[in-house]
Length: 124
Ligand SMILES: [Zn+2]
Image (cartoon, rainbow, N blue to C red):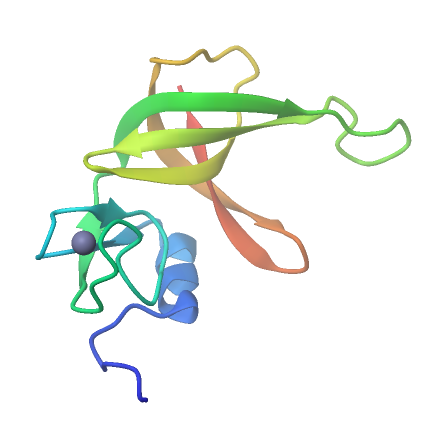
């Protein structure tokens, strides 16, 4: 089995994030839009998915504060949010500590997490 050439790969997605763009995948069969590269539609399993550019503005869908043990460089802890961008939900960091579910946020940058993987950063 070979990958379809038009299918979004992790490295294309990561490169776009570093470039300030968010890519997702839209399923023409059921309309589901994923905010990260997947081999198949998470909703219906179709492999006929298309790469789409996601909007850079959205709304907080859920937010979690990650506590960091004292002594590490991010001493305040940080917030990870699921952001609704158009029809997709994208996981990212927040650079504002006071956002709540439903707040509008904009893609504002990128941060390296987990050994050099980029994560989008959103701010209110
Ligand atoms: Zn689908």
